[in-house]
Figure 1 (tube, rainbow, N blue to C red):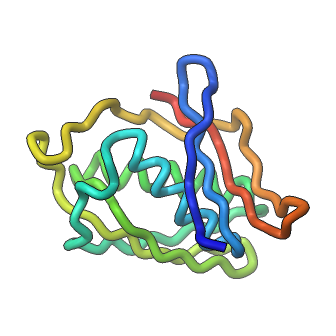
Figure 2: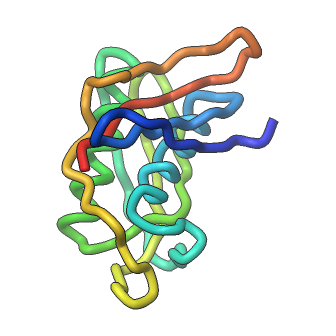
Figure 3: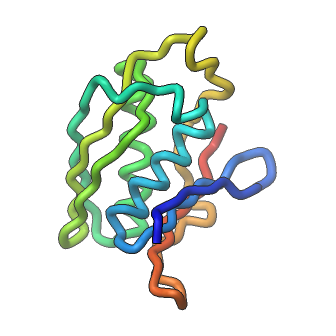
Length: 139
């Protein structure tokens, strides 16, 4: 199964979802979906690396922390990410996010994401044994 991401509708906000064979891959795909809310991820060159570590009592809160940390890193560093490597072990996430500084002409950012929310927050394994990681982001 090739990991993938998708968006889903939710009122004025946007749902992001990652689907993959492991929780780490699903979290990485959810992050690609996050980038795709802002710009086409294919326009972002993975030339800079940012290390990110999160820990939470369960996978759903870990996803929320992960997405909110990415939003924070993008805002503070003025960077967009294109590729992610995520390892999850005992509700501890260690990741590398690869991207580049925002170039308004190149990336043509569409919206600013404010935060990940508890709305539709779920991390689970479906009947096909694929991991789904999703939440709604406030735009």
